[in-house]
Length: 114
Length: 114
Image (cartoon, rainbow over all chains, first blue to last red; front, side, top):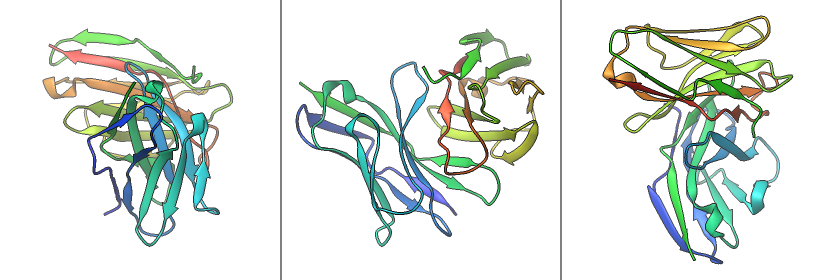
């Protein structure tokens, strides 16, 4: 079955330290991978995507993600976290042959402490 | 602001009732998606419409139905409501049907069943 997993429910990091949010996937064929962020009482905001090409993808707000085909991972990273990065982060993979159906991981809550 | 508008923001109703959630996509977007977010099920894809036609279907109950109108707005109809239908319902839109295009989410409709 095609799926995506986020192994950590919560990540705590001090402001200014590197932030990593993990994601692994299981799909048949080439994966289309996405990261979204959700702030309280808001919808999801698109951060970045991997479709093909360079394994290091740069996105919004200083975030980047590294696609690793051998490890079937797509970890989200930020070199220096901000308190304002505290939010819920979702990894998603597009599945199915028709349409643009996304399957989301369970989400990882990031808490950046001052 | 994502440009996707969902109404109402909050809806409180009773078991057995029927409700309609409305979504206006971003200007120019042809695809509309519906998702359900709940604590126990996480974020689940329900259905996608592209230019008025159903394009992909997910874990949508038979009690739920959706449509996309000629002006591209969409409605999600939920009937015979049960306590377990209490959730946050998101609409998203994208320009077309390609997985290369990110989905842009509205702020959701919070449905509470009493």
